[in-house]
Image 1 (cartoon, rainbow, N blue to C red):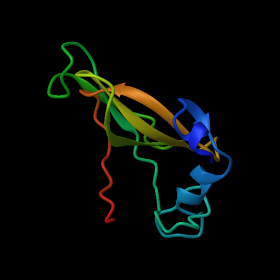
Image 2: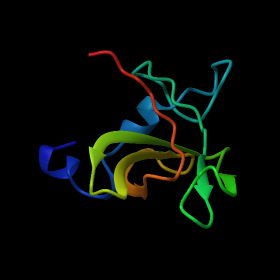
Image 3: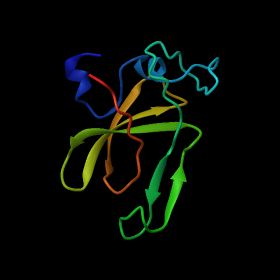
Length: 110
């Protein structure tokens, strides 16, 4: 993926998402190749309804088809950039989400 493409929103790249997703042969599996060793698994995300708080009423969404990861990059006080992997896509989506939606965090050592 080029530097210019990396800052765009929406689905980008070619097979980078598949390279991050766990492979079908792993104990915890998905439909990727896991050529990076990242072993992303579908986790879904928490959607808060009413009042903007996960502590209120919330629902788990897309748990079998989506992995969405917070980045450390805020857009403003309410939105943050996420990276999204999906069963039906081999690439990666760059998107925003409200900070009060629950997203997994994956710590990566530099």
